[in-house]
Amino acid sequence: NAGVTQTPKFQVLKTGQSMTLQCAQDMNHNSMYWYRQDPGMGLRLIYYSASEGTTDKGEVPNGYNVSRLNKREFSLRLESAAPSQTSVYFCASSRSQGSYGYTFGSGTRLTVV
Amino acid sequence: GESVGLHLPTLSVQEGDNSIINCAYSNSASDYFIWYKQESGKGPQFIIDIRSNMDKRQGQRVTVLLNKTVKHLSLQIAATQPGDSAVYFCAENKAGEETSGSRLTFGEGTQLTVNP
Image 1 (cartoon, helix red, strand yellow):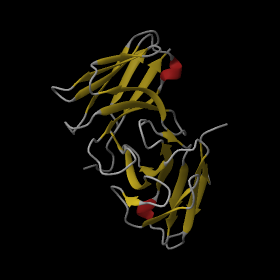
Image 2 (image 1 turned 90 degrees about the vertical axis):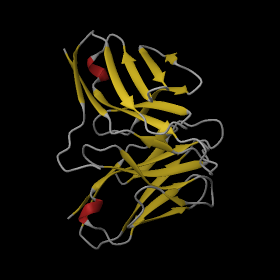
Image 3 (image 1 turned 60 degrees about the vertical axis):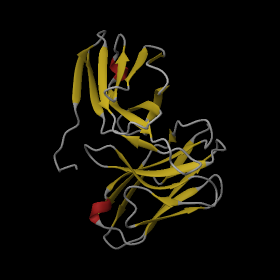
């Protein structure tokens, strides 16, 4: 089915470990986004990629890096995980021109102990 | 800012009643608004959108109202069903961003509970 696919769905890390969250979309969307969602809070933008080859910081970029590998894939990397990064991470995509709705993946639940 | 223990606004309704979920947005320059539904353990799903040149838009069992004067957005759900139980987020697109992609800013959400 067309949509946004995130892997893994669940992950437990120890403080200081690194990991990469993967995201792929098959809708030929130009723009992709990474959000985090914490209990009782809305979605906060970490990084986004307006088009292939470009990435920019969002509201809460510290502690994260991203790579727009190609038009389909946008990964989020935690170089040295901290307990404050315990959250649910959502990847989303959208067409860049004339269409503003986002399609979201099902999320990655990350716990840092 | 947020604090530990902050609870989402909640709305509890009886099955079959109409629900109204409200949202205040922050940027008077925003020109596009969306409502999303998020069920437990899932990502947000698009419900309905509205542009700033409109006051009202209707979908299937849902209506979005936009009051630009007071920067207020509402989602009305008719004949609410148990399957409507979820967290509902409003989102605004901040116009004037110098990017080729749109960027949405999300509200904190409202937990809707439908009692049978």
